[in-house]
Length: 339
Image (cartoon, rainbow, N blue to C red; front, top):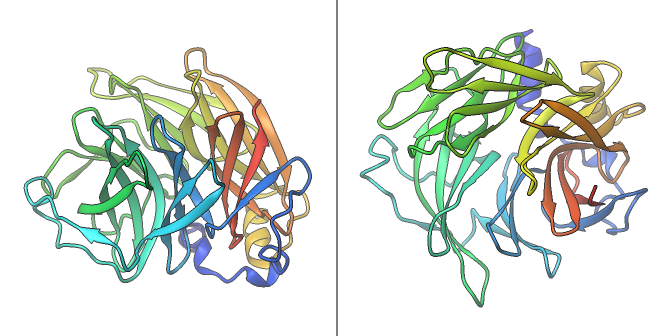
């Protein structure tokens, strides 16, 4: 079982380009999906508030963070790069050993909206260290946003984070993906993380939080369910709703629902066969819209795996489209009509 888990966490370290020979030759749509090409294995996506910019995490061995101009349909690798900037916040991240560009492998993303066009970007990082890397994004009225690394929070020994979200108190909550049982951890300063009561879940993956911080929403990859968990309350309250697929990432919709994106195959092993061997028959990307108030789910996308787009992992709303990021070495984001 442990090997199975580490295989899942390390999916993208494998070389899938042999199964995607046509992926980089053009950017033509396939089926109901159009594509935006550029970022490689864009595992997670977040939009900069009230702007035309999206951030993507390219989850390759030598990965990058990308800025995507949604108006021009272009992407730029912004970290690491020759222009990478670092300004460590030693007051908040006093236990961070400093920036480490080498071996940067980004995974989950979360954007904490700030004031006056200055926001905080949280990035789950694998590679040469396990950590949450913290960046400052500064918007510009005439140019692309500016990205500056400002600190990090190292993961506990033996923990590999998957997704992260900022808390209203200025801390972090992150999922530790593990089968058969993983957990959510919280950090509020210093070097210590604490396990969130009631968060034990079969493969916790994506995570979101309510505005008031009283509820966590956890993607149960193994249980194919979205879990609603109380936070900071006297009694632990937990409920869930089943969906038709493994949930990878969660993102808020403009209508207050959650977009749960992921994938499904005949067996959990079908996902690995698709990624590792190109055997993707019966495997598809799915997106479900979940009403968090009454915990009902409505599937809105079911897109079969193909040589251009193997496996979806995240969905966000961009104007009148739903953008789906994925893994497997493809250099594209799938774009679907809003639904």
